[in-house]
Image (tube, rainbow, N blue to C red):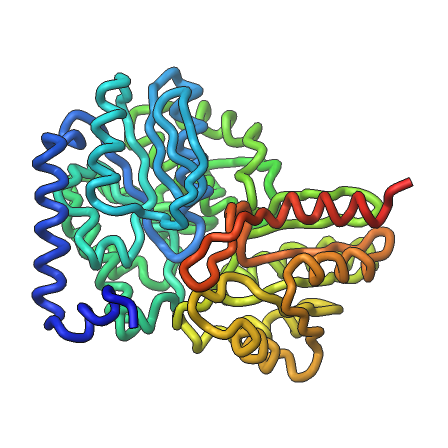
Length: 403
């Protein structure tokens, strides 16, 4: 048993929570509370956090503002950026405080962060002076880590309770009333039909596919408005926005399409498949889907659910390895495949799974690979093995179609 797991078993939960609180305090103290010198914007929710943060950055930078960004894909301070190789959406307290200190030194005016429920549970949002809290949506996720959906939602709620200035909330999410109850000096709601910012008063034509990206865009526009940026200007910027690496990213266009997406929750996966299904029907082609599920004991309940969704939308389903961590990858594959009722082809090696899908694809078909997006590694028993779905697709495609 790992030392971390042993400590969690032995110590009472309130002591573990206090330990995380102290880490947050000392992290802020050592770096002298840098967030007080920045306008800090936090985006939370089950899905859409990364794309929303990237859209906010795109708008703000086009106005000439100097931005710091910390999300699941990259760390960016002004012009300098690096890939997030930590495999953590919201890093530890000392990392965040050090990052914000650098942002202040480089003259950044704003810092945009993804805020996760696990991060909130471990007090990583503490002693960060957030000016804006953004809520994208909520669906069952991290249930085993939090104990219930209600506790998962409560963790998100703590972030809004701690942010007193501005709240930006998706009015069309069924949990919106829960988040609207927290006091703030200003609240802005958004949605396709409901909310202060909606498609009736905010016409926008994105280059990105999917209804979910319209929600992300409306959230980003709402944040821009909250900071005095002209709405029409924000819309114009996002209409030219080309997207985020590993989020509905088209890696191959001809003779068939290959899409790589990060979706790993049932809600996100269904939205991806639904978006591509419309394209598949128009082209009278087949949808070939590669998926898996994360290990480490995380949300085992959703594994057969992911398989069921894939079987419902996809013509061909390949279940493969994703990030097994300390679990038996074959067991995870079997659990996902069980939801497909015998429709899935099971392939342990992810490269082989991708190769097989490319061989199955005919002209006009769509291959979609989900679960990892642009993540730079596969996590197996404490090791991070270098990996990139997009690069593997290109390599296997080139081998398949080499002259």
